[in-house]
Image (cartoon, rainbow, N blue to C red; front, side, top):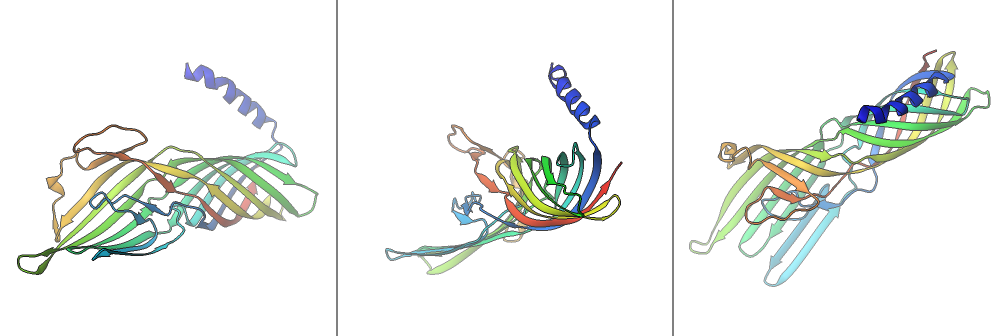
Length: 295
């Protein structure tokens, strides 16, 4: 049934490409920085504390006084060094389509530090998060102004399909608890690693740029690129866990290592279901590269 539904669309696409005047391949590199982004989240289930995805947070509650300080930074799991591989077709001098694969070759680290202090409890939470080579496929419409000169302005816009967008999180958690009986502080250290995967949630992207015809069949291009996309956690798996330097991962069953993140659920008692929330993947950056005609 699905094949019958998609066959007309494939036939239309192929017939349209058959009328293309020019086919091309382009490749390039760029660097993107975060724009927008969620400031804080609650991934640390051991403490149920809110902490910044990227930045610092401190809270002290002693003798009825509550003091807080924080430094929240912009964040995006797709920021950093980008790679672009694409093929496209121009149907006329001004209109075409482009199919790109965007690779997060060296994404930025998201790091946070949290300190929580009360009368008999002190907690330190150090978290590092990094995307695992995100891969996005971006079909786009291309519009360009071809005046016959070597320099051409263009714009491109389309949807972004996150085919691979997982991330890894490492957490170091230190807890000092005061024992009134012997007036001493007792420390516990925990370290764990989790792998997260995301729900499929398309985004949108746009570019404006310039092309320079270096020689016959070879064009240099440079553009300002904007991606707007937020994903949502779907599932995480605990892959390492130690207490005071001793691995205790084997004390967790395979089911206990898995956490599912949902938009809606009813749970009671111990559960491995938690509310999902936004994970920022938006960025803005500069990309440049080379384009080669294929016909």
